Length: 360
Ligand SMILES: Cc1cc2nc3c(=O)[nH]c(=O)nc-3n(C[C@H](O)[C@H](O)[C@H](O)COP(=O)(O)O)c2cc1C
Image (cartoon, rainbow, N blue to C red; front, side, top):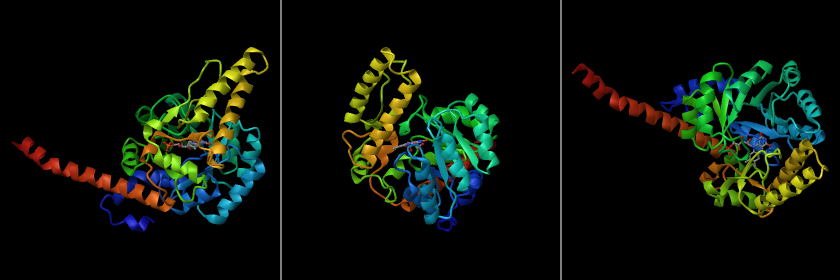
């Protein structure tokens, strides 16, 4: 697909800006499609990879056998490199990593916590490139020391589980400190090439998008789930509240519906069990995560958009139709190039008068 763009005047600059990200991912473009539980299966991942991006399988709700199958099916559909997202709290965490090693997966993206040095050592020793999420400069430095070879910073605008800080602020705060050490990808609220270029100029080596790919033809999400995305505006993607600081509730950004209300009632139930000593805090956290996984499955697979969770980022408002992964990525790259050219021409247009003023 690169050939489509190589006559564009901004092409050589864009190649240079993304060289590190492309080399790191082994993909044509440094555009990642982040793992989305129940959505990111072999079909979407292969679709993204074959369109020149980098897809990531979501292993958050898969068993060891299911992940192995998904990896094989992905490899049947694409010869390009792709990643697997494994979350630390998964009950078969180590076994999932072993499947990735056995199947020679190129990248593992570790989520939902800070992995131990042993985890990074296991992956590095097996020739797998580990990546992790850095919510602050300090945690990012620690992850690099522990063995992470790349980082993702994900802002509050994103869909799914999110931290408290916006993507723009995280990017400005973290990129100057960490982007020289390892490749850093920016996620959360990115949905256009203009957005991607802005983060490349801040020092990112690429971006990770999630919501934008939900409505791709290759995404197996239920048609009703996709339609809810196409209808929604940015302000519909809201955060779930935490009723009590004792509950380990990581806020989830999703389109408001009955599931949002039911989550509030569910928290009350869990709180009552905590008070009665029936549950420990850690168990309460697991119950909450199971709630989300089940609720998201109902929406994505069964199309229950009333009572299932419609996890979506604020960028959902910019999704207007179903498209192929190729169309999405092609449009993103075209926008990066056109906005880069706009920048070049803009700089050119005021260089001369400024130079004249200096001479005068
Ligand atoms: C439906 C949905 C499910 C998600 N599930 C996961 C997940 O299982 N693991 C993960 O690391 N991120 C998950 N995410 C976050 C995405 O990987 C990605 O980082 C995020 O969507 C980027 O923000 P955007 O939606 O604004 O593009 C999910 C996002 C959505 C929308």
